[in-house]
Image (cartoon, rainbow, N blue to C red):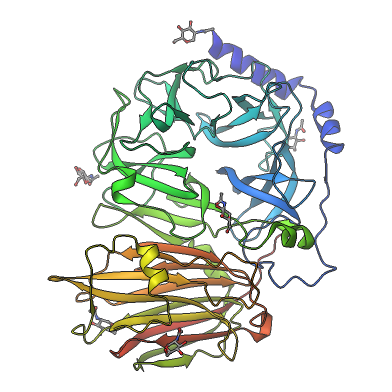
Amino acid sequence: MATSALWFLWLWFILVGDVTEVEDSRRTHGDLYPLQITSIKQPYRTLYHFQPPRNWMNDPNAPMYYKGYYHLFYQYNPYGAVWRPDIIWAHSVSTDLVNWVHLDHAIYPTETFDINGCWSGSATILPGNKPVILYTGGDSKNHQVQNLALPVNLSDPLLQSWVKLPQNPLITPINGGIDPENFRDPTTAWQGPDGEWRVLVGTQGEHGGMAILYRSRDFVNWTESQYPFRSREKTSIWECPDFYPVSLNTTNGVDTSVNNPSVKHVLKVNFNSHDYYTLGSYSSYTDEYIPDTDFMDSDLRYDYGKFYASKSFFDPAKNRRILWAWVNESDSESEDIKRGWSGLQSIPRSAWLGKTGRQLVQWPVEEIEKLRINEVNFKGENLRSETVFEVSGVTASQADIEVSFELPKLAYAELMDPSWVDPQLLCSDKGASVKGGVGPFGLLVLASEDLKEHTAIFFRVFKNKDRYVVLMCSDQSRSSLSEEIDKTTYGAFVDVDPRHENISLRSLIDHSIVESFGGEGRACITARVYPKLAIDEEARLYAFNNGTENVIISRLRAWSMKSALIY
Ligand SMILES: *[C@@H]1O[C@H](CO)[C@@H](O)[C@H](O)[C@H]1NC(C)=O
Ligand SMILES: *[C@@H]1O[C@H](CO)[C@@H](O)[C@H](O)[C@H]1NC(C)=O
Ligand SMILES: *[C@@H]1O[C@H](CO)[C@@H](O)[C@H](O)[C@H]1NC(C)=O
Ligand SMILES: *[C@@H]1O[C@H](CO)[C@@H](O)[C@H](O)[C@H]1NC(C)=O
Ligand SMILES: *[C@@H]1O[C@H](CO)[C@@H](O)[C@H](O)[C@H]1NC(C)=O
Ligand SMILES: *[C@@H]1O[C@H](CO)[C@@H](O)[C@H](O)[C@H]1NC(C)=O
């Protein structure tokens, strides 16, 4: 049967497979030995976020842990700083998710089933610790099909060489309802109690975005299940679906195949330039997923700023679920071309179910903390109404800040208008310079000394009948003197009750990116900024309060961040 056929092929590739030919074709492929950009001054290049040495990157692919190494594959254009359809899989490895080594490209167009591009996909670790990759190929007719790639040498912890199964494509858009040009991004597969594997593929049907479920006993022969995952409301195509369990009882992650009464499931999909998710229950018997609330009703997102095409994986080394995403540029394509690169990877985040059970909580992986140096900290600093307070002593262009605000008086909180349902709109209407009652208060990062340039990450507290609503904003409107930049303000409501807890904010600043975590990771906002004045040593960091009520910085800790080693 097909099972033995797969394992026969597997053995064939390991023992007799023409490994040298695989390596030869790679040698002719693009920038095999990419160069570090050193010649031009690069104020916007990040120094502790993952970036390829040059050129365009987008989605992270197939993140996994294998034999002591974290693997990151990613969508990469070896020919320049813009996207193109014949994209390939670049590959990097790390032992700590902070420092990375770039390896040779892993998967790139060679066959009729992927000649027009090797698009996103995911890794699944098969029993016996055998990783495989399912990815989307653009075939010779420009149809999107799902293909399987296997590592050539399982003894190589770096998994440097991959071969494509000759039976590819394994999943094709045969069903008449599927748009063959919008059928992509297979998830990590999970195994049901019946031993069969399941995988989701993103697409678009008559009723809008959906993910089709396929089942297979042997990972080669896949059959479509009758019941796709879809939302009640019509959305555009679902890209990059991700589907995994989260523990109800602990903050630990669980393997993707786990399903029992101690877990809930997360379905994440991409549309409208965001990563939306729902929480729900999934039956391994009927393959039905019932979300607690619909995408559009709950507006749950991993990140309310720039954060797209995320992928998660279970890290067995530290029993956690890690997710991360592509963060694109906000300046013009011509600037990207001039600079020679575009796109970067967010800091990997641990993700778990929050205490309320209604949302996920995300926090930068602990490993990033080993880059912290020169701590500055204080407690109980009064941040009076209409003041700005400089936090000196850290390299403000490359820093990690954790701050917590105590609100002694909530009486003058502005009244919440019931029509204010869109936090992003509310943040743009009430930016950092619009005075309030309780707030705006927060941080001014990547600020110039004269404050002409700054990115404001702040909170505003509203009163809504007998409860309080906390709004978190990332206001880029004054982030740069240069004009040709998308300076959209981002916003989110944070599920914090200021009567019972202080409001915390953590921001990771790295030259042109600001990743902010509000309410201990209950709301995340990532922004890209391109200051003209506040670069390198010229950048400053401030706390500010433009509300009428005083707030107290109950605790602030800030660090300069060392650069990661990414070669
Ligand atoms: C497989 O990888 C191991 C570990 O890197 C290496 O020692 C071995 O030579 C490799 N085998 C082949 C056939 O390349
Ligand atoms: C593939 O799986 C389906 C469903 O289990 C089965 O009916 C079919 O015969 C299989 N095809 C091959 C080629 O094994
Ligand atoms: C986890 O919590 C759920 C729901 O509260 C409960 O049914 C389950 O038994 C718990 N599991 C463990 C291992 O404590
Ligand atoms: C990338 O950034 C631009 C401009 O900031 C934005 O309009 C676009 O939607 C982004 N693309 C994705 C896929 O997030
Ligand atoms: C705070 O308000 C003052 C007066 O309106 C304004 O000049 C200043 O720019 C505001 N601060 C911020 C960070 O927007
Ligand atoms: C806020 O922090 C201060 C200082 O750590 C603490 O004394 C206070 O109880 C906290 N307030 C709330 C509401 O948790």
